[in-house]
Length: 229
Length: 229
DNA sequence: CTGTATCCGTGTTGATACTG
DNA sequence: CAGTATCAACACGGATACAG
Image (cartoon, rainbow over all chains, first blue to last red; front, top):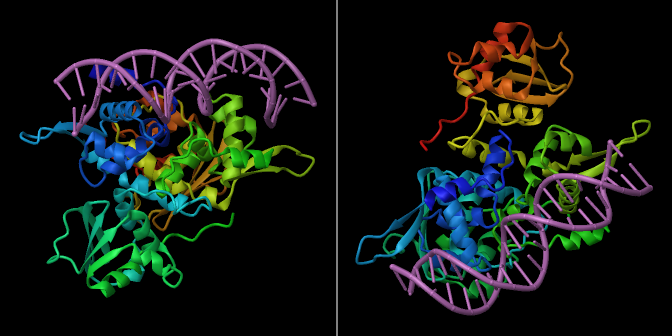
């Protein structure tokens, strides 16, 4: 069966020696890159992926997971009992897809068609912080902010002109503030023009702890300028 | 009709605010990224694209060109008479796809499935030099090498720790050497282990001018290490 | 609860042939 | 040269039913 899939994976080849062509064979199938994106911050279960990717049907997700496993991008692993559930996890090489995600995201963010009102998954929001971090704006500032987005916890740290974002329950002792809310609203506050972000949007987020620390934090991230369109 | 296409481009959305998702909507359709790749080094005609992308049929190419034009990635332009032919040209924003191509190519080049025996287009070969340039290996060396691949001329220049590659007829006066041959054979020589590149492969390339300069040049480019598979 | 397998309507893809 | 027309095959997405 597994061999079946490996051999079957040559359905739609480009027959092109170029690396970018091979990349599109591996990641270019519909939904494939978004599945990888959702695994970028750690292993997830089948149902987690479905929840993060509404519109992706179960049969297509199954197929993508098979193909990505055959390609060596991810592995399926059964968690040790008692939590005997299956999770999907990127391989080290799969983790290296992040620069691709970032280059693509940065490029497309300049399109007039980018629509911030569309749904945004928690992982997607956190990854965008890694992509859109503005080193010059942050300078040598330091801060750790916790997030709880749709029930999922993350900790983002800025230090030494770099940013990290990991999946973790934010402990009030370790972060300056904990922000709770929906990813879309967080994006509006972080990427919106501070003077035009509606007060109503701020009200949709709950900020516990040092609110000013989070306010400064939002200034260290910026979307690229849009092209006219 | 053109408006028709713009509005029609809503066919397969992801309904996801993430930039990477939008990027896949714009460039993720089959063949789309490879069409952009072929335009990266300057305008090309419909037939040029078909020649560079065997396996891409005329109707699909037509459709991709429409979609990419509607998205603002490329424009169609009619060359002034007498050469009154139509060419497709990337917009400034379309040119910015190159980092995506590079990130994807660099990532996929580590796959065990990369197959250097597959056909390689001249543009693809030249772009790979921009991607795989090894700044440390080049040091402060300088050189200009001309190439004639499947009849298309290019000039590649290395200077100040950077590489450029442009479409241009190589003039013997401006380059240290002119290499004539097929892209695949050039790739074998540039990216192969120098000690294991068959003498037969070298014989498939014609090197006019300073052969040693070209030999040094080949040492400034390297593929990333393959993963086990 | 966590996936997997099957059926089906629809749209996309791709080969061939053909037109301005 | 630059596409359009037609048609067959297949991929996608939704629903549903089934297995561990």
